[in-house]
Image 1 (tube, rainbow, N blue to C red):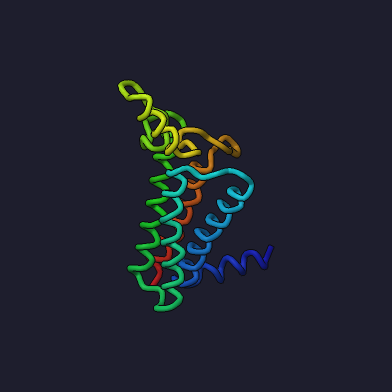
Image 2 (tube, helix red, strand yellow):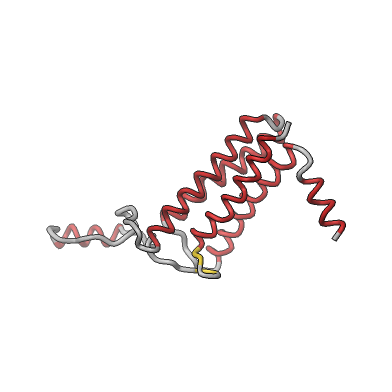
Length: 164
């Protein structure tokens, strides 16, 4: 128990350590989604959108190692994971049919189109729909879990920004 407490104190002691912890959290999420993908859970368009801000957060962490833990970098990391959380909220709403998602990854009306137009649309349609939950754990989809983790990482980035 003492070693866990010491590790937590060490990680939270400086801005750089907090930034590295948050960046490592984003990297861990990116690794986790690759594992899910390897297990056959393919990402939809909105899943990809949620990943891009985490790549940014990892890059910010690397940049902090190179040039130092500057306040603007901590704020950029916070904004990046907040963006991922907001996309995750949008994606969760699409999955739960609270609102419509992008036309390119959800079903929509097909009236007024020729057979050739419909065939063309079918042939170019994505394989994974954004409005279907392919995996859930404890009642939350992967998009919803991204919101939870991204908000936790946001809190760490903000804590880093507040450190001198």
